[in-house]
Length: 511
Image (cartoon, rainbow, N blue to C red; front, side, top):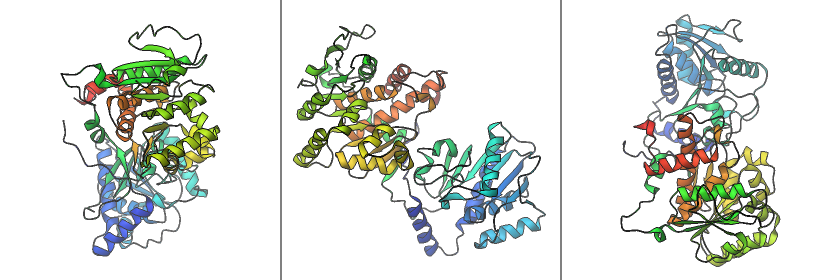
């Protein structure tokens, strides 16, 4: 097993610009653009290692991203057939870009002004806009981006983006129309959050961070990427001299008539994550006496179970419908760690008395964080904040932080690049998961997993990080085993998660 790496800090665009300015002032003779262009050239050569023709088209815009593109072009000119599609006013202000531009011309480099009629390229490098874009690309820029995406999708060439795909917001991950769809992004100095959440993963492809030699200025953003090195130490250990009482009692509260499956999935997930005992509390009056597939769990009346003081942790809301207002208030009074999911979130959104109960608990406890994990999807998050789901998606990081502060709880904002926010400002973006998870029951499974980790003894921050990472990693393992992305089920993920947990979060294909 490789030694753990340091956490990867997420840096906003404003923070990044400050780092650049500070470094430039301290190292006036160093050209970061020269280093950036050379890094892009090296990655381009690596991508074309097996290509016989090595035909490259470089898209150069008018700003610093275009300057990086010209430096890459000059470095690649002697080793590949390079064509530069230059858009906008190519009046380079940076000295490194000017030198590269002149060198490319002197070397008889081919420069064009519009998309070629018969493009035969192995690789296209996007250097149009970078981090500075604030509105949708238009005109010739939009035309080139659309043509790139169309031909990349049918396998005409690989697409490499410089720093950030043109059209993508580096902070929020919101993609304008159109935005480059890259296979790989070479990003500079630090990780930008927009590459890892919302639309970012669909447009950035594989992200590689090039520090450009900046080692004396450390990014200071509050957020980090959630990787296996951060969660592996959180995996619970089981002593030889132990019994089921050491691993807690989980109460799953949900399952109104016609929706019992959601609560059953959550209970099964808790069972497979190692909780000592799992109790399935259903609101459905015609509830089954047991789960035939997993008779280890005990089925109860949800209205009674939510008052049971022997429970170590709860998960509430899965398939609960509109039946749980009184139950949720009662559970708050028990002061047990709790995962608040699905219909429980909806209940809080429309019930002022329950919102007030959270504020009262926050004031009475004096703690920066209550022992609760909220697990909304964007629609549920929008209900909590009184805004549309589209507004949540336009700034997922801010939305997660707002909910965390309002409810003094850890928040798991689900979706591509799931965000985990702590009310004290800490934030992580998850790096696992795939589109196969876009199916019913996945959130229910996650809620049960989180409740099990709370019952075993992890605090809400650690339980959220371990559960979210493991949930996505299990879906990735299922994908590797041929179970997705089409037709992947929550049950598949539960079993894969158990295997990963027992292997210490090492995939069998990592050995």
